[in-house]
Image (cartoon, rainbow, N blue to C red; front, top):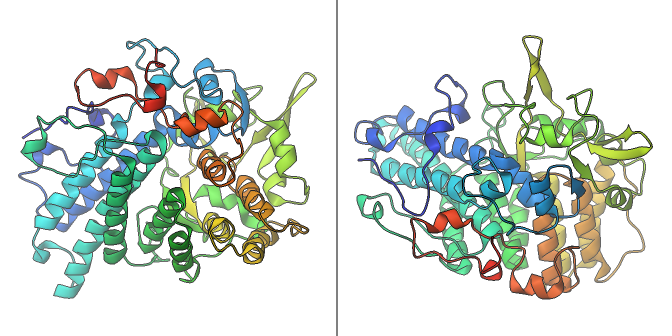
Length: 499
C-alpha cells in the first residue's frame, strides 16, 4: 500500500536513475513493492542503500549541506546569486513565490528531503527486523545474524543522522518513527528538540551495538556507516547539547580505535577525493554514476569554482578574504597553500577554495563536467578538534591538553604550533583551528553557534545577541509545508517574519 506522510511531499521518484551500479546508487525500495521484497540479503542491502542516496539528494538540493553549514558562517562575504545572498545575510524569511519551485531559498526551507530519507530508514528498520536470520548472507548462524545487524545498524544510523541534521537546522521537528498504515493519514506536530535528540542518542547507541569498526579493505569503507561513524555522530550530538564529558568519551572511542590517521601534508587534498585514511564518514559521489554535472547552476562547483575547472571568471560565492587572511596567518600551512588560490577580475582579487576540484570532462564534452568529490561529513581531524573543544569548554577545563591536540593537527598541516595561548582563550583558539581545518566542510555555522553559547559573545554579523537568544539561527520552514498539516507551526523566531 502506498503511504504518504501528510507533513511532507514525497518526491523521491525523481531522485535516482535505474542504471546506477554503486552501493549508494541503488534505487529506494518503494512502498508498493514492500510486500514482495525484503525477502533476501540483497533486498536489505538495496533498502539501506536508498537511505544513503536520499541523504545525498537532501544535501545536494540547493547545495544544502554547505548552505546550512558554511554560507551563513562568515566564510563568504557575498554571493552574486541573490537568494544565496539572503542566506549570508540571515534574511531567511525573505519572500519567495510558492510557484518558484527551483528557488534555492524555498528549497532550503523545506525539510521534505530529510523526511523522505527518514521514511526509508523507518521502512528499513521495520522490514529488516522482521526478516528471518536465515535469509542473510553468511556461512554460519552467527555470521548471518551479524549481517542482519549490520543493515539494522546502518538504518538506525541514517535515521539518527537525518534527525540530528534537522534538529541543528530547524530545532523542533516532527518525530516520526513508525512505518505502518496508521501513519498514512496522521498529521504530526513539531516535537521539542530535546525529545528528538533523546531519540537520536537511542538510535545511535543501537547503531554502535550493531556495527563493527571500519573494514579498511572494503570498497564501501567510510561511505556507509560503521562503529566509527556512529561514535562521530554521537560526539557531535553531545557537543551540540553541551554535554562535553560525554562528547569527550565518544571522541576517545574513535581516536583510540586505531582505525584512522591524519593525512600527511603532502596528501592533504586527497581527503576531498574521498575514502582517505582520515575519513570516518562520507556521502559518496566520486564516480560518474554518483557525481553531478558541475555546470548546473545550483551546485557547489558552479558557485565556488572558476577556470580552469569551470568557465566562470570569478566565483559566484565570494570567499571572505579578511577571514582567510585572519585564519591562515601561517603561510606555510598546507591548508592555505593547497586549499586556496587567488583569482583576479581586473584589479579585484578573490580567494577561491579549491578543495572540490576533482572534475572530469565526459567524452571530451566541455558542457558535461562531472564533479567527483565526496561530501566529507566526519574525519579524524574534526574529532580531534572536537575533543579539544570538549576539554576546553567543559566544566573542568584542561586547557593544556586541548592546546596539545590543536598543535597535533597543526603539525600534520605544516603549521607552526600555537604558543602564548592559555585559559579561556583556548576555547576561541580551538574554534579558530576548526575554521582553518574544516573551511567549506559544513561545520562552521554550527561551530560558531556552540561558541556563542559558551562565550556569550556575538559570532554572526547579522545576528545580534538578542536575536541569537531568540533562536534566529534556526531556519524557518516554508509556508508551503502548512498547506497539508495544520499541526505544525513556524519556527518561533520567524513567526510573522516569513513572507
